[in-house]
Image (cartoon, rainbow, N blue to C red; front, side, top):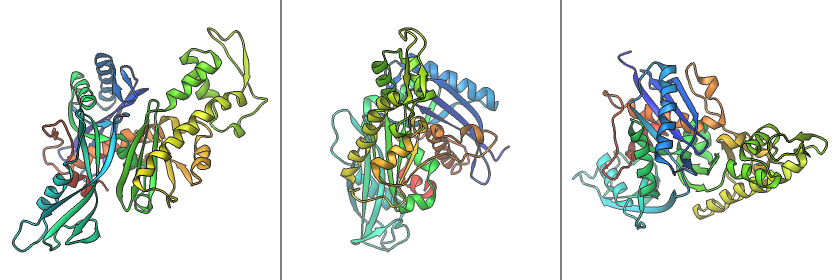
Length: 409
């Protein structure tokens, strides 16, 4: 046990909070030993709207994970989402420091910090600076310049930004729950880590994490993250449409969506009748086809908005490896097939492949972000003889990017 370090991850969603506990094995992989999942309160579209409610939800999820694992949780790798997340391209240039012109990790860090200096709004801060490629003396296409010789090092990077207030509120909520934050990782990036193969990340794949309050996406190509974004719509909007269209309470609309919902009208049956019960239903019945006619337009809108927001990244042609759908709303029947129609690309469901006794419980698209966050935390822990430490910078952020590049992908 002395060689095993404990790590934990917290995935904050609009509908649920998931806390995972894992043990990092000597070989470097993480064995998941505890799961705590609780219906969420106090979070809407990735934004804290009630800090006490959200903190209580996290406490309950942590308690469940601790009871299952028998291991106390003191700190977590935290997922970040929300409609405040943005992205832009930047570059940074430095002269190499050594007399022999050999490029070191320090040179890479300085170039990455130079790329970090982008114009920001008054409430914005940098979340991640992710190199897309390096140039040495003008020669491009270099993935890792360490050890190369050159006078001038340039990095072309993707800079992910977010609302400083929103991020600090998430951190304070976790701390109010009695936990420290080891690191913060973009949820879509974590989902990509959990569900994509190395070949998919290399060839070019878009991961769409369809949640309850938001739909996050990340485009990977050449083994690197190329673009990210968030659409402020998700499964809750579909539920709301059902509630309004059928004049039903939200809980009943959610249950009907899960039990009978179809995102593709051609899959629905005119002769399959759904009985509505409960307040306001008046014993009514409707066909599955009617329900699909409510669901499909909103599902199509969500998928189309993702496509529109990929355009600034220059994604104008087909992605060779297609699209991978994950997240809780990805399980809606017909959603994958609808995505194939909207994108005219192959689409598959992304299921994480975790290790340990909890593997079967977690091999579901809804747990992709949580599993990816835990794997990220395990990567940090495997680099330290002391286990995971709190690594946040003074501005409340994040992991060192070079560790992300060399250890994660």
